[in-house]
Image (tube, rainbow, N blue to C red; front, side, top):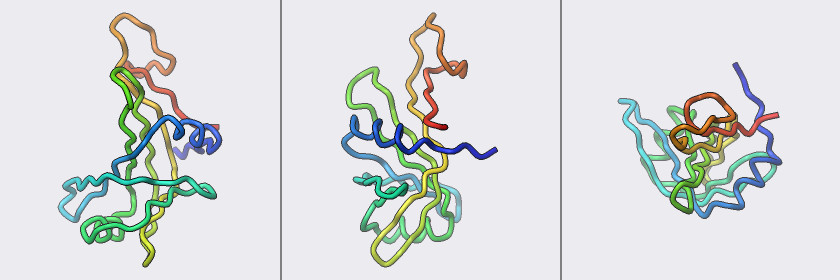
Length: 123
């Protein structure tokens, strides 16, 4: 099922984060993770310059994940899955799904019912 990402909600959520991790996979499906500073412009994350492993992985396996870690203990992690486009200038990612996620406090009901505290950013 395809979920449309609410780009206004995503842009608002990004204001609370300072950097992200870009996760790609190689031909052996092992994860490769690098710190990046993506900028959301015209509905795409512009990651900029990337290294050889990231370039090779994203070109071969364009489904990638961006993870913004929480800025404080107990805060939300922002996770965006998307499709990468590798160019000479670097990498862009078209977001397909995004969620704010954190472990639920024991005994506290959650809005999503997933067992953790998840807030999908969708229309």
